[in-house]
Length: 466
Image 1 (cartoon, rainbow, N blue to C red):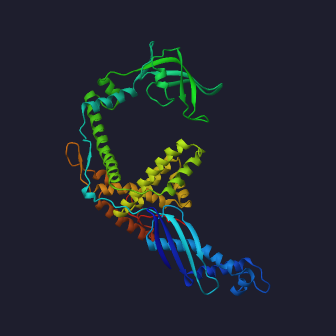
Image 2: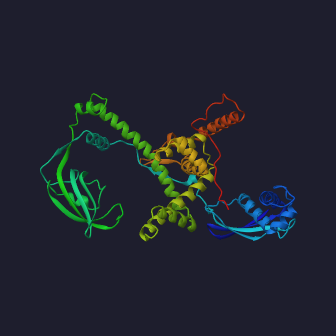
Image 3: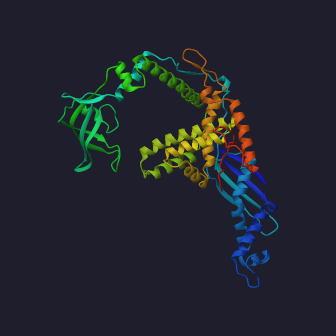
């Protein structure tokens, strides 16, 4: 088989493939066998009709069409392997030539497909990253203490106009023209939370119990989502949250500690832990931002358009041009990030362990409210496991990259992120252990240890199919 690649765009190629008759022959033989099972020819049993009789009865065209349909996807995959192309979408295939008769000729076809572009990543050792310090201030502890006091606060009714932070029980009605499109009654709302209607915080501020006001606002959901409505809101009660005093009694109420000082020390430890964890998140985000600033990533328009169409169709909003623009921007960013991270994972030879994949799938199953085994089985049936491996590899690529970068905090101190990004030694040890487990299981060893939580399995990707 011969294949040649012509670059049409930075993200699109035309693959020309020539398949010799000998390579196509297994598919032709299969076509004869399949057709022989379908036709009735006097004097021959089903499945035993000779090829020459099949050609007389159904014609060579039917045979070669069956053979091409049977073998085309395999030849396409083989050509991808030879040319090391990384498709991002389904190809547009055009068969340009087929053998004119048995025993001679070639299958020729072209495939236009959007592919992952070649991008040049910077040397990671040249990248400099700075994250916030983990120093814990008195303000940090006070903020944590206030959040704890909020949990143990009590709501008390007040006879005054409402201010930000107050809790108001409201009745609300939304009207468009003469039609009442929505209404709620007896709902508790905290001024400043901003989780209901746009403009509601401003309308409620200054309102006393028993008072009513109106304002205009776009509806946030339902059949009239996005449309402006006339909203009438009535405050039936106004309450403020009274917070407990910060003393030893509060420490005993809100924690396992007997004194306020012990509680403060624990809050300080909590804040330090959060800040340390945030350093790892900040370093990952900063690295991604730095790479995107440094590297020009061409984005395949066809892939973006397909994703946008899928998204809008699922929401029944194909005609919403404003929303289409938002979704297009989000899809473009997501695909650009994916291309960058796939390239990074490939450059760093990132491998995904069995444990890492299982941990990711278990976490994902919880988000969908499914049992892990049920979730994994549904992914296997849909052929989505390779895509999940890709997701884990992209996430791990940033962690592996950070191992090669010196990260400093705002005070100039080198930050140790090994707790969060792992190490090459741990990866290698788990790879060896996973390989030993797999070998023992293949040998039928009933005493083989269970797969560990960490290990290595080759990164996988799913080729596009014809």
